Amino acid sequence: MDIDVLGPLAVRIDGVSVTPTAAKPRKVLAMLAVHADEVVPAPSLFEELWGDAPPRTATTTVQTYVLHLRNLITTALRGNADREYADAKQVLATRPGGYVLNTGGGTVDVREFDRLAAAGHRARELGDYEDAARSFTEALSTWRGKALVDVQVGALLEVEVHRLEEARLNVLDRRIDADLRLGRHHQLLGELSALVSRHRTHEGLYAHLMLAMYRSGRRGEAVEVYRKLRACLAHDLGLEPSPTLRRLHRSMLDADPRLHEYVTVEPPVGAAV
Image: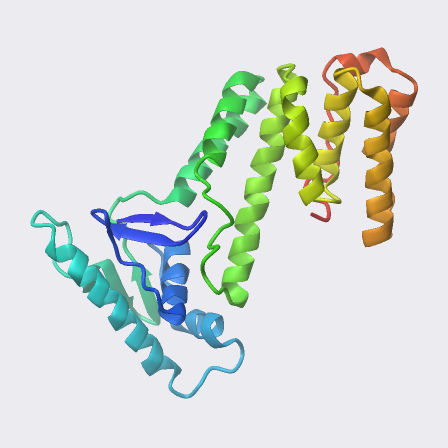
């Protein structure tokens, strides 16, 4: 079984899709896919589907959705004579208090993202920024859009989507950090300009853009980026830039020669995205 949640939801067995089109069975599958190989308690499914007001028929209705998913799985299994599982109940198994989607060692894009991101963090800690940038880039390539973009998420899946998007943004920040350390400031300008437009108050991305502009000989524009961030923070959140950002701004005003070397810029990552 192959599972993709970093973008549109896709669950396949030997290349055959078992992803339903109906909204609520799709939501049940998304919950099971996000927690693949782990038991998802039935009350969690109730909360995701109906919030804090599940109907009296919640248990029966979820069982109906599970049956629908198993029918799709059965169809996929019929085309594989060498299948690992004997029937759909082994793939989508009932457990005390809930259900589990067994991947059977298949690929899960979240796990691949986590593996590559961890490799990037290890390389970064060792000072191997070339390998770090490469691993972070490969991790980001596992994404195909916003997580579960085609699922009508409820309260629990919304938390999972936010967690995944935060992890993505953190890896992106670290990949840009590694590229800057490798002197790739010219190549980053377009990407960073687009990113700060989407993330109006993300101090880490603004700091990277300021440094890339400064090192590209665009000192005045780098200072203007700081002014834009300050205005956004004041308007949206009633905040001032962090001390780290203020120090970076002051260094640029003073034309500190150390800015042409790599300066570590570590404001609160993800601050008010």
